[in-house]
Every structure is written in C-alpha cells, then in structure tokens.
Image 1 (cartoon, rainbow, N blue to C red):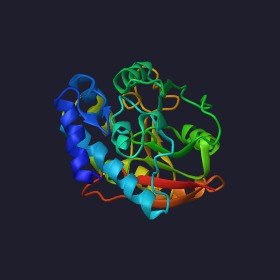
Image 2 (cartoon, rainbow, N blue to C red; image 1 turned 120 degrees about the vertical axis):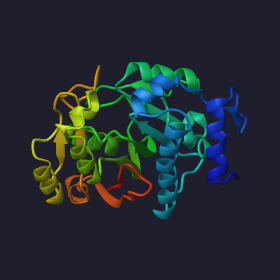
Image 3 (cartoon, rainbow, N blue to C red; image 1 turned 90 degrees about the horizontal axis):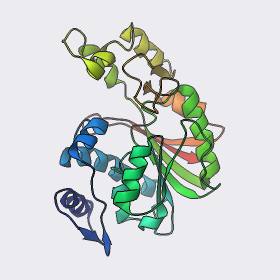
Length: 276
C-alpha cells in the first residue's frame, strides 16, 4: 500500500513523464501549462500540491467520519475542470468509479481524452444533472462553492442530496475570511484584470466582514470577478460561506460534519456535509 507521499510523487512524475502506470493503469496526461495556469493560477507541481492537500484532507476526514473510501464506491468531482483533483482519487478507486461534471465543454473534453473514458459530462449552471439518484457515496468540489451564488449553491445542494446514497458525504471549499484582507490589500497597487477586480468587488470590505461574521452568505458578481464563457454573473463570482451559514442553511438536507480551515496549509476552508 502506497503512502500518501509516495502517491503524490507518482502523480508528479506523470506530469513530467509520459506513460506512468499505477495499479496497471496509465495515469491521465495533463493539458498545457497555459491551460493549467489560466484555471488555477499555477501549473505543474505547484498546482498539484494545492490539489493534493484537498485530496489528503478528504481521505483522512472520510476515515474520521467512519466512511473510508472503498473500491466499490462511486465519487463525483463537481466542477472537475481538467481533472486536477479527480486524478488523485485513482489511488483509492478504479477509473470507472470516478465521474466529473463541469459547465465548460472544453474541460470535459480534456478529461475524456486524458482519462480515456466517458464518465465526464457537461452540465448546465443549475441542476438537474443526468446522474441517477443515489449513485455516489462521495462528492467533492474544489474552488466551486468559492464562486457560486447563494441560489446556485442551494440548488446544487438539493441535487447532491438526490444523487448521493444515504449517509453519503460531500466535501466543498469556499472562500475563507482571510481572503477579504487579501483582496482589500490589492487596492491602489496598480493591478489590472482579475486582481484589480478583486480589489473592487466590495465598496466596503469592513461591511462584508461584518456580514460574514454574522453568519451571512457573502457574494460579489461585479464585473471582472464573474467568469468568462459559460460562467456568467447570473451564478458565478466570489463567495464566502461562514461556518454558521453552512451549519444551518442546508440543515434540512445535510448535517455539517466539519468546517476545516488551517490557513497555514490551506487556501480554502473545506465544508464536510453528510446526507441526512
């Protein structure tokens, strides 16, 4: 059985070397560094390090919750992108048990090509999906609820409840409170593009913090922070979900098992929910 460090090194090797095999399966290839950087802000080992921390936290906490991943389980990567997160779960699951959905058709095609199967589907910004009910034991979503509007998040939580097995688990990241400070620090620094938009997404960052600390869902879809292409301002921007909100807003469907955030190693808090 591989240690987590050994597995990380194998995935990193697959970035720099063609035809790396694990458990008799050739690991997925990578899109260009340009595509990686345009979606995650980094490429290669750096972007894999960030993904690995999320994957590792999921694996370890699933065990703590009494639901370790088993070979028979099915997992959905929500907002799969080019498969940065999904590929790490190949250490626990066979390829045919890993699925992914995304609103960006180009990313879905990349996954179909690099993972060499059709478990990846294009979805609309709002559910439903074509996934059958009670299909998945686990759903993971990295840097997706960090961006979706309050209405979109609520809609997807209802869909997750439909497609999860009883007592299934969903792990989702959101923007953390320190991100307010980071964005405000960008003001007046001469940035352009996305960085400039982040500095202007709230007229009053202090008010945004107050609302967050009260337990409110805080979202901005101002020009520049909404995405391009299919990621329109109707549902996409920058989102901050505090623990108090996560614990109560979806309580009819899910129990919040843990709100995990260690700013020394994580860039996004992780919300772990279990289906009621």
